[in-house]
Image (cartoon, rainbow, N blue to C red; front, side, top):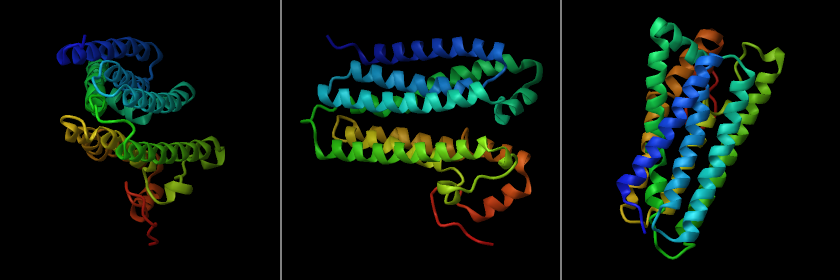
Length: 262
């Protein structure tokens, strides 16, 4: 028996909200709100897997989707956890603590719960794709897997290049311009965005398949205007100053492009 759509979404929200509540308490004790990024990664993946379990589409396609979103969540969540566990709290969150002052825990609780809702929004392409009952595999399925592989590989390379740069004490206070970071100031964000188009391709033939575009559209908005690039660059300017301003003038903010020499 198929569960009602509203019950699936309610259950997903309750699950992610509970996870965020637990990890809000963890950050309160550890004084490191960066754990919210880890929670979002794993939470979004778990919601996507749940959507596959309760989907009505082809079983093979649902297994594929669940595997892809699961691998994405484990890779990104593990990468972020290493940073949270081994580094000081990200400057973006220290800035929020200073801004919110004595009310910081109240606002952080709200912030964590908003992240629970965002996890559902970003996992929505999986919900629609998991209802695709067309014969599997199709050309669009293969295209989606191809996009996913390219994007996850690109994001993993960008993350590894930045991590290696940060580990070198001689690079303290410097700007990473190695590899993909010479072509984009945020190549990890770019490939993260591209990754969501893999689910668009896999779910395009589903009923209401065009709604899979909601994922990459909202992701682009958040990366360019909300929680991605703006606070990251503001923190980079505070910590690296003129060297980062020069980096901004020479390297594309998002889409990888040949660097400009001024």
